[in-house]
Amino acid sequence: MARHSGAMKTEAHIQVERISAARPALNIAVVTETYPPDINGVAHTLSKIVEGLRARGHVIWLVRPRQPGATLADSRTGFQELLVRGLPIPFYRQLRLGLPAKRELLRLWALHRPDIVHIATEGPLGWSALQAARKLKLPISTDFRTNFHAYSHHYGIGWLRGAILAYMKKFHNAAQATMVPTAQLQDELAASGFQRLAVVPRGIDTDLFCPTQRSASLRSSWGADEHTRVLLYVGRLAVEKNLGLVIEAYRALKLQHPDIKLVLVGDGPMRAELQQKHTDIVFAGFRVGEDLAQHYASADLFAFASKTETFGNVTIEAMASGLAVVAFRHAAAGELITSGENGMLADPRHDHSFEDAAAVLLNNATLMRAMGAKAAASARALGWPAVVEQTESVFAKVLLEHGTPYARNMVEQPA
Image (cartoon, rainbow, N blue to C red; front, side, top):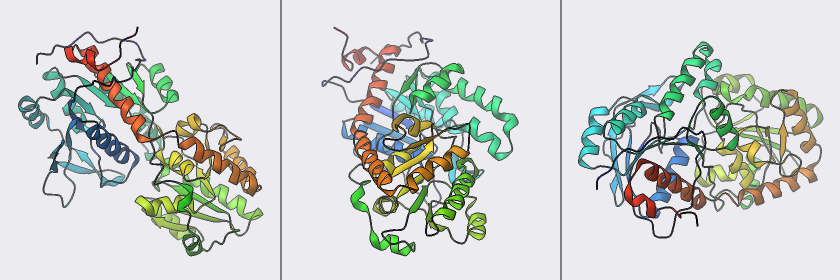
């Protein structure tokens, strides 16, 4: 089927129509530096999107770096993989940085031409995919999932922030659409010159993450009984997560509640240092699946002090698990939490407000439980099927903008 590139609009926002019932199946090329078994928010979210698109009849061609020990690419109905060379990412040794693969992608996409190329990460592999797709005049969409420019000052390269942001803007503005997880991030990026932004939130498996996963035996292993207040953090143990503030708040709250427990779920470069320095903190390591869900539901309050997230999947996982959340008015928390109703939001300009917000809840167990119940109710509206449908709608809009004729059948036209 012939395709031609249409003129690219310059407005910052694009409107996403709903997919009609009679939608064609697409061949979708997905390019990413990270995918399960990697454990991180990008890998998890992308795998859910891919599974959902396959369930809706689309064929996925996934391009990702080969992981250590992996020899064979996955191949099954509706799903094919191309594994390319990769290297460990500095500061993120458990993840791979995909090396450029433009020649391989040109050969693959010339032989099996995709209807759309979706690029989820902005590394060397993503950049080579962008160049290959543009050479073949293929429609392109991207994800903005990681604030690399915001991370820069945490790793001593803050002087590169401007260059990193310029690269990210050049990268994403070469696509027909860039998906972002929150309206707040959409506004911030639009103000910096990013174009054609579409909000597609993250989803949550509310059958897995739910209050019924609470485990008395797990709490007992932490040294907590039914009356103990358990403060929980889930995520990477790294400087950009602002863990120091979580621990400061814990220390201050322990003066009022000597039996309080802090449980850290996850791993990362700070773990050894923290574990040596704070022997009273429970370090639970990486947890996945039902095990992770039980860790969430068995706590009482979720503390998340990061100011660098684009979304923060852990926020909605905690909410769905029935936990009141204390976080800064930022990313997912800023979008999903009404402070004082289903959680507590701190002012990102004042670190002390984080401790104050946590104290409000820890000093009132009845209020903390009530907010946790409301948080679980809020999260139930964030199922993955709706998120997958919104992703599909962005693809439809991209195809329409690109000039793909049958894309007009994919969106409901205004009356």
